[in-house]
Image 1: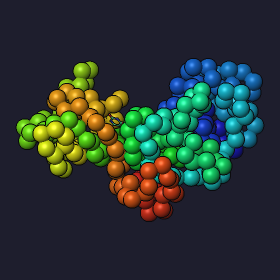
Image 2: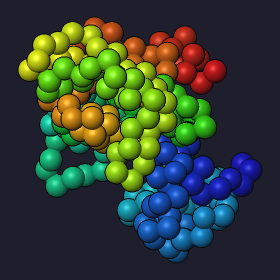
Image 3: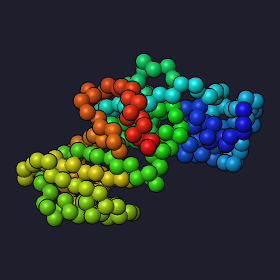
Image 4: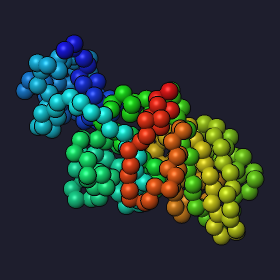
Length: 237
Ligand code: URA
């Protein structure tokens, strides 16, 4: 087989996304033929070289899996062991392949999460240049005014960053509690919560309902399903 970059091999083998693989290499967690490698340009031949991550031998997966999960609150988005805390992987137990989450949701956020063992797919969906729109439904304190919704859509200073233009819409509400639909093309840490905090309407609960063309639909909370072929095609188009 042709030589490929170590991070690409790890992503193709379903260990994690390419970007996460780069972090793991830089952190010294990856060995090639028994030697720790921290050089990001390292190339390997999957037929001959022995790659170990955290002591485990990595092989290329044949079959690719693409899954959507309706993540409940209280589960951490990680493929790694977290010393007994609930992770999203606890909810996809019936699948024997090594898959990992595409992007992340906060532990206290519910809703649509994609998981895969296809590194190219994960890279495509997560890459900032792809500008994949994500839609969130937030329950917030109080009722945002029209002017506030316009501010949310135009861009909000969330402390260290001004968010890029998106969409914000009041679904329903009263003076105490409202439901707001927020559409953003980026994914800074706790972005939606920080946006709503910044305009004085803290989030009570948050749910992601759409990523690009993929909708959560009526998948029950805590359940997963395989993506349909046309859904995968629409995501990578
Ligand atoms: N924005 C947040 O604040 N939290 C998430 O989990 C996702 C987007």
